[in-house]
Image 1 (cartoon, rainbow, N blue to C red):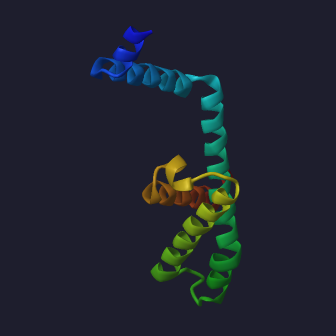
Image 2 (image 1 turned 30 degrees about the horizontal axis):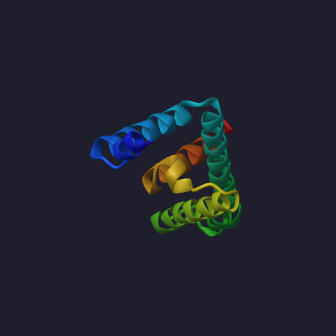
Image 3 (image 1 turned 180 degrees about the vertical axis):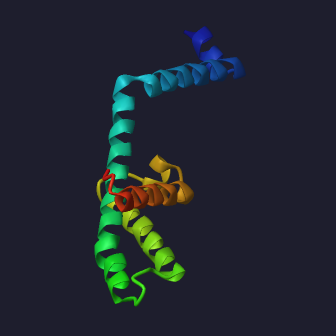
Length: 127
């Protein structure tokens, strides 16, 4: 028992313990359960972005377009709608226990998802 205790108190022992923990963590990250959790989180994140885009369209974009003489958004209105969609999506995902920034890869990626969903809705492709 003294040999085990001495090993655990040495640098080599600490390195071995950390290596075992690292291997266990790597195995967990490859596990089916972990992948299902990632897939579920990503779907929740995308659902939140879609809900936010639809809500921004109904409450901001559509009324603004109807009120404009040329039925178009200004650049400022477009940026405000995109920012609103990002903030709303972040809040909706958080309410479901998902960190949108972490799952989708930051603000730029969220903006990219918002733009993609807007483009699909505009083209009539649906989602």
